[in-house]
Length: 194
Length: 357
Image 1 (cartoon, one colour):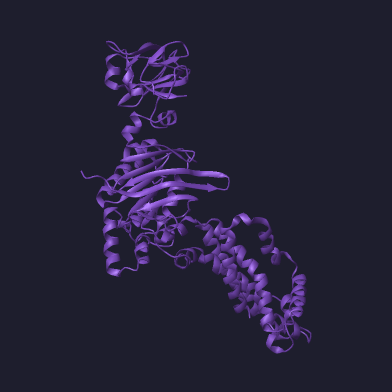
Image 2 (spheres, rainbow over the protein chains, first blue to last red; image 1 turned 90 degrees about the vertical axis):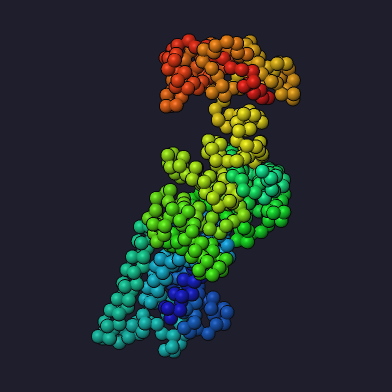
């Protein structure tokens, strides 16, 4: 679940960041819109998404959790990648075109490799947030075990008292989160150090 | 020498950014194998014109003909034209060799040919020892050579250079000016360089165009522009010029103090019209022997020693600004002058240029 939503959010977030930075004159409105999912309290976002999904008559399940996570992960990936793009020298994109590369080749061989550390950092951050996210997942999940995420499972188990299994699971979640976060920080520091 | 062939014809090209006209109906011919300079103060439209030649801007009006074909709307990656960027725009994640190979890989050439052409250009630009380095491990001059090699290896019909020497220190700049000229001869490619440095274009260019406010003021050889500037702006912008403001008469200019400066008056200037007479500092003689058409006396305000020559600032009654006079070190040795001295200055009528004020 976390992997899929991270992948989608990373792809969209990177493209969004590039789009926003290239057309910076459209400014503030778009900026606020992108940051909105980061700022809005999780519970508000969760309820909003729930009512949105039920308005569309979607059956709840793993796919709705993924969609919901994409919404808030997008904002995080986008802001990390944009931070990198602020110091990006756009003339190398022009240089690539000048040397005969198409727009797609330029993206693949020039833009992406240069911003790759930020993209990976953004992805890891998104993954961390996704793995231990509870509220949004809880609201947008369907009935049945198929759409139960790990934090939801822990919550369900906790109602019957704290067992060693819960401790073990919590440790796993924490370990995964800390590892991903540390990696993400490392990569980001590498960017600033450049 | 056979008649030079026109490679690129810029035909009444205009470019507007919103309300601002950056390039205003410029027409220029650039010839095969020449070193052409676009010169002007910042904001004169020279960089916009260059970007239109490279394909990064599309003109609102006019045509750009390369070998007779209109390329005004051809995207940059489809033009046989390469640009060397002011910031060099090297790919930071690639080695020098990969940077230089990139353009040839885009042409899908066989690997062996890419290798031999890259090797050849790295040798020409003396970059062989740095082939495996990343751009961040290079000095400014080396980066500049990589940018040049990367553009030249494509063997473009036209190489555009945007302020190529702007980021280098003065001494290195002098060396690179000559280096660029040598390379241009060696590879036989037409160079178009954009610069705001008039000295640079005088040194390097075969022909140059002076631009101001998006308009072409004059296009000629550096020598012709230096000796016969088209108007007061060009005269002031290229080299150093002493100006005497006044009113036009039939055979010269009457200065504010009533003194007459003899010189050839352009036909367009009617007597009595505001005019300005001008003379180059190196044309003025100190304590002239014999007759000279123009003479004045003044007080030396400052002296500057430049090795080969001596520059004097002389306060004269002719103009509010002091005259700048350049005399050779030899002449200065024969008759030394000091600050505060009264000196006599003289120059010929043939060295005077008169412009509309």
